[in-house]
Length: 151
Length: 413
Image 1 (tube, rainbow over the protein chains, first blue to last red):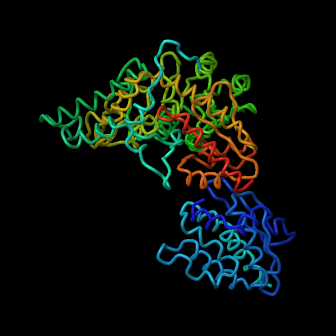
Image 2 (tube, rainbow over the protein chains, first blue to last red):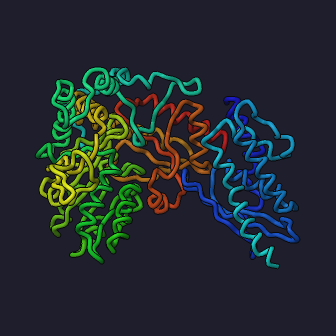
Image 3 (cartoon, each protein chain N blue to C red):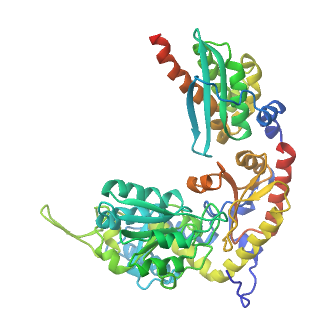
């Protein structure tokens, strides 16, 4: 198998795509729906906040291995973070998966487990797959923030 | 589809040599291009025809009196005659050059549709349609209060003719169906659909992308009233396509876009429109693309459409056989009459992942919803993998796809 393919489909990613974590709805949580018009994939992200922090995050939907693994690992990695921290994490993640070749892999260490997605930057057509769950989370958080400010 | 016994077999290696792009490699492997229903590759005859226009005869059409203009005009109108012969249209003035099938259907929706649809009138399509044969009708229905009716399909991906007949009503103003389903490859019984519609006095538009090719098209034998197809799926350039329509219908329709070429005289008080086809060809057209489309159709005619259809028929049968050996593979769309399209899913593997891994084997297939989301919904899948075959594809390439799918399975399943 080619080096790029191995980089893209790392064992961790394949594992999360086969056995996605937090693949369930959360009752009463803020939700948003994500849609990839390129492939018709749909997914819903659920996020439960407590004191401005992500108490629980989960998702339901069908997608390719990259988007499923991304959703699975995202729900794990945002737990316990404030909404601002979660959004900052998305920004670093997005920078990683869209990095031009000369900056490939930069900032990966700061992303912990999410660093396995660095290989996506070699596949411009697959960036959307990895980013979709995060865009959906961001929308869910944005929805959640409004009521937070009124409480 | 019947295989003519007389036609000598296609020399596929000779044909492949006509397509310069096919000799390259992808990720170090020979390129296996199995996405011709998306867009087809171009033979040297087309590439050279387009380039020759710019090198030798380029000028505007319908305007000049000088030598170059005469040459360009002759070549441009020559392409119209080529199209007329290719689809056996009664008259060349019924051939309108547009950007493609999408524009052709939008034109009919916005002229014929807008003129004839009153509140509650109906347009009848099928559940097999490409988005470009759905959305233009939705738009015109929204503008006019018209209603879009959809004939359902069977589990094998065939239009239910009994339902279609039932849905034909005194309010139906047009039936619009694809010749071949781009997502599943089903060849629709267009002739029968036309008979059903005409029995109720309803005209029929046929979306010929992808129908031209692989099918030999004879609009008079089909009996349809409009036929639209795209150059880029017929080995011609992108950005050029054809709407054929019966002269009497085209003449009764209002113009679509206003501008140069589509007028006879203009004053601020009144403009007199040009005759067909020019009434529907406002502005300077895609001159080189039109001429190159003519070259593409001449290329196909030179090989013989019956031979091409027979070859593809045999190749698609082989592809079905070969793909059926892949464990966990399920075909989506198993109609009796199929053109060179094989849509499938692989258990436990998303089509996108399939596409990426196959790409590294040099194999280019389409993965996704194929601009036919209602079809995907009907079969309960978000997407499929689709291999589409053309006259330049070989059994060895089908084998490469099958080998690639085994690698995909090793990785994911």
